[in-house]
Length: 94
Image (cartoon, rainbow, N blue to C red; front, side, top):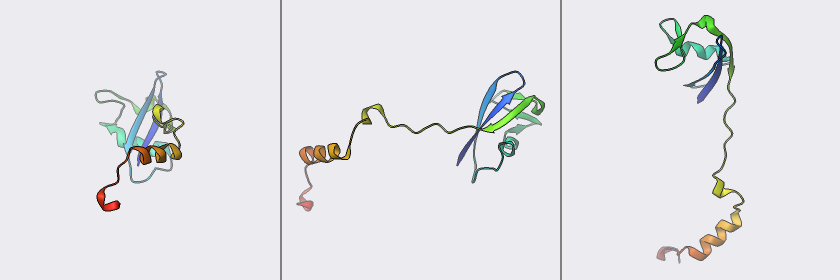
């Protein structure tokens, strides 16, 4: 399961950090140790900050799943009629 946390830093910036875990930790702070590098918090490939600079840590809301724009308004009946009119059954199904 992919868990994302939002980390607010003392300089006013916010960083999203994600980690793959077996199960979600009870508190977002528990995930911070996965990003520890040399006693500092890794917020990027080449960037880290002091843990003292962390003001707040919270779970980030997952992005809503959306369908592709061409799918809007498509109903099962539309698919069924399209399959009947343009689909040829293989000889073994006739």
